[in-house]
Length: 89
Image (cartoon, rainbow, N blue to C red; front, side, top):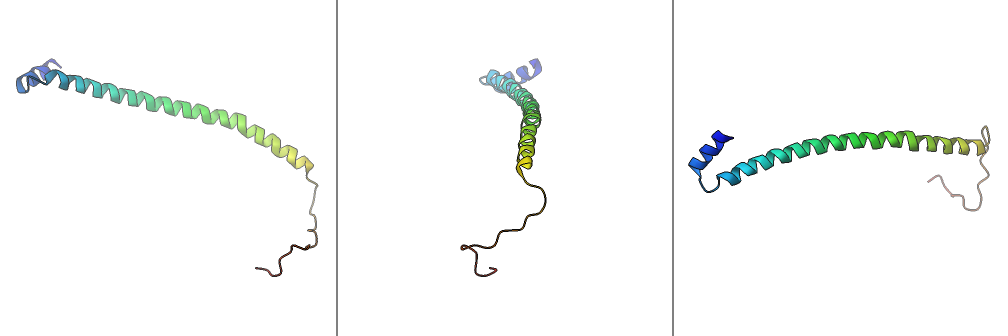
């Protein structure tokens, strides 16, 4: 940093501090994005795991309840009524 600051002061004396702070801010921004991406991946995994263990069993329980209300075996379809179609199309 000191070598860079010396070179910047020699090349452009008016903007050397702003350029160094911009470089530091860029490094901090990239570190923030890295941490935020890791956190988002972790939280996404937690939410998907919670959905798997909370929502899936509830749908399985509802499906079992609906299955108990169904009667067993094949059933003949009722005869076409008044609203039946006139052709196969």
